[in-house]
Length: 501
Ligand code: GLN
Image (tube, rainbow, N blue to C red):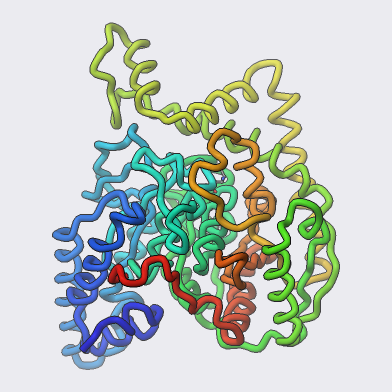
């Protein structure tokens, strides 16, 4: 039997086939590993592939699946993702796995424990397929800032996949994994999801544990997932989310399972269209696809309403004060003493710190540490950091006001589609603009997702949906209804055809 349809058919059929034992976890893992062996040299989407470790986990999953199917009365007791192989962004600590965060600083770091997210995937029976490439310490929008080299976009190998979770997005787009984890501090799930033509969700801040997720900007970082459909994202979010006492910002809530949100009618929902997101800066190709998607939501019975987010225009400057400030503090732990890279050449403690950090960090990370240290320093704190925090509050207030007249917000994910590798590397500010529609959402801590919504000259375009706090279910409901009536999420990249992927 060809495994092909099962590998590309989404999570539910795969979970069912594994539970029925018409295919084994080992066969599934091996089939994806075979695809990885062929396509990853072209994409560079993965930092660590360890087939032996993956197959050990798969064998264990097979034992569990076998006992679940033979123990009377436990037929439905099999865990939600039993035997499903998942790619994890290389930012989540996973016991025994090298966890580099895309940095030379952690090139030799083997995590001694599991992140909260990894624990939950394990408890759900999932196996680890590989570890995804990413921008160093999740800083970037193109995946060109990885110590392990850039990731290539499966739709056009000369283009970037987006970042910072570009490896995760590229893997799902190229069919190297049925799902992958990611993190989103300013857009790092939604933006690569949009550029790679896959579905990606960034939950409400506090929904998914940050324990063991290497910190970039702690007040903004949020773990989430990539998959082929909103339906799959709902399943993944059910597994990933939940209270964790080891993360003081994790929130205890009893929400209905997200899987219960899909398959439902969306008639009568009010979709807010922020007028500031459709002005200058939005490219014609992306704008046209997004507008067609909005018309489709209208055809499904949603009501489109005009909303305004006036403070959004200050989101990027505010973010590039707050995020580097937090990063400069978080990254001070990498000093060459306890873990990570240590210079071979030092004479005293200061030299050990300086050289280890000079050698271990890349240029973009150093830029952020310098900006962060500057804005936090005496005399500048009030002028920059405090001002940025006030802008952050204004942005959150804008959203709160908008949600008085709508149930969710819809718009573009990025102003443009994926750019050519290297074309933005000499100009950090133009790179930072790629996140203009995603960053306000992180500053406000809201849930948001991106779903494929057409093409701009052959390159995928994403539709962004943003919800009020804790309303991921509503976003998934609308995204699922959209996907039931369109087939953008089913399109596959031609660039890899004939490569076995
Ligand atoms: N591109 C943004 C940055 O470089 C966002 C990254 C992210 O979401 N991790 O900070």
